[in-house]
Picture 1 (tube, rainbow, N blue to C red):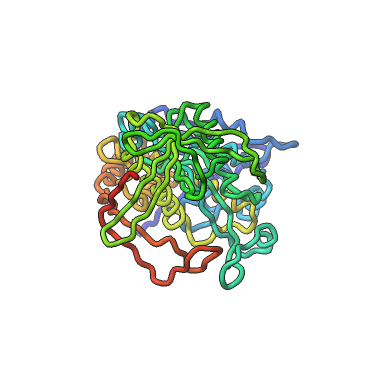
Picture 2 (cartoon, helix red, strand yellow):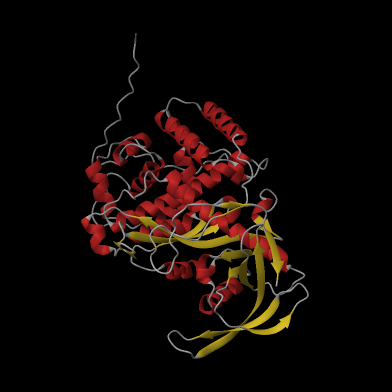
Length: 462
């Protein structure tokens, strides 16, 4: 039996540079074939000017290719960065060289890259579920990524205290501004320098899109943060809906017919009781009940002051969609990431890995939108199945770029999208889980029996 052998990659002389540089496809948004074209659409070649230029001779392998190979490497479950670099480009890069190049990359390369690549994706006519009364639904929230116990990580990152002592692994805090209806990241801040989630989220306010409705949880429900959100929203014409903390006092100015209130909240100077200013907000108090379980009280603040424009009951039901942000983090951690820990051995490369995961999630959000084609909701297409099939197709196109004709690529891509439209998931059921952890850090209750409750949820304005 004859066996077909794959031709060897052509070696590149050190004085020349023949690595393939991807170009944006001219076929339009719905005609993207392969990883390089998808990445070029996410980050156009005109945006690569943000990458720094080093002194001396130009490197044999451009920095743009190293970054793309890193993202492609994290898409796959097995293999090394050098092997995946060889799949994409007409050159080879061994593991030691790739590690050296990653270690020398300054962080602002990835920060600027995310700022150029992450942008709104939903369209009002095509993605109606991503909007509410003309407002683009976005949410902001944070999470933590565990890093391995290497000497570099342990020296740079402190470990949290638990009931039994120090935590097993150190954490890197990440905050993401998310387009809720598509699980598309709009901005991301990574706390590799020790910044808290509150500080990271505050830095994302400058990238809030126009005509958006921002959803945020109780961590951000204080007057100091809401005052900054209010200024950011006024600059771009956006609105917010934030769950306020229960211990903050507010003075009622007016009560509306739908049960909401117009309140005045004082903003204090940091570390003192000096009032800097008063901000006027609309407050909605809600009683959330489920048959057979204790009622829960919610307190929401918004700058949608007109009850006719934004009824209180609709806003109460809308706030429940903030939970989509938690599902987005589950997709990144449990489906996209290879294991429970980041694979990087230093804090800087771990931050690069998180940034690459965010970029991959943005690329997959675009693939789900293309597969949905306006016929089904994009979020009804399984993220896990999309990742598995798109990963396989990108590998095939990378291996056979010079032998697969353009018409065959088009046919394979269309069949992939048609199959994904058949892999839709049913609507998610209403579910509530206890707010407990197995190893309490501070005042959190301890989780012993893992249980969840299902049933219809009712909202009542107080």
